[in-house]
Length: 76
Picture (cartoon, rainbow, N blue to C red):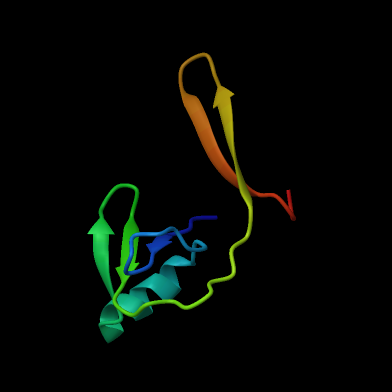
């Protein structure tokens, strides 16, 4: 499942969103592309008291490639 990273106007990380939500925000002019890889958008309006979920970074050192996953702490 792919997700898009989201930053507020102060460049603080917010919860990730679905690519469709990011596309709608970009099309409506409420966000701009901050970085292409990893795809990150920055909101044009300030978010007051954002609710954040906790995430955990997991690495899988394979024999040829290293896998990286960002996992939600609550759902595992």
